[in-house]
Image (cartoon, rainbow, N blue to C red):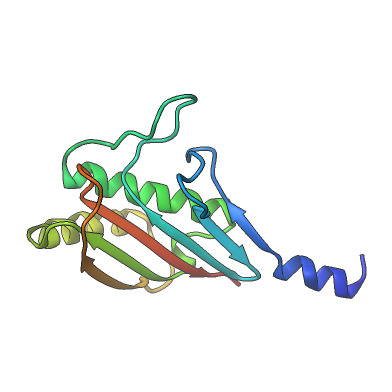
Length: 145
C-alpha cells in the first residue's frame, strides 16, 4: 500500500452500525468515523434489535430508557474503536424539564460504574419533543488517539 492510499484509508468516512442496531429509518448513520473523529447520532432507549421486529423502547421509565440509551451510544463507540474515555462531548435531549435531576442521578451513577480513566466529557442538556413514549435521546462526539 502506498503512503497516499494509506492516508486516504485513514481519512475515509465509515458508517458504524453495531449488530444491536436496526437500519436507520432515514438516510443517516447511527455513527460515523473519519480519521480520529467519531460522531454518534442521537440514540434513544430502544432495546437491541431482533430480526424482523420493529424497535421497542426499553420501558416506560426514565431510568430504563436512559440506561438503554447509554448502552446504545456505547455500542456505537465500541463499533468505531472508541470508549467513553474518548468522548469529548455528550448532548442529552429530555422531553420533560422535571426529569433533569433524576437523569443526572442516573447519569452520574452510570459513569461512576464505567471507571473512566480520563476526565468526563463536556455535556449539554436541552429539552425537546420526541416521538410518543420516548423520554430521552443522547448523542456523543469522540476523538481517538
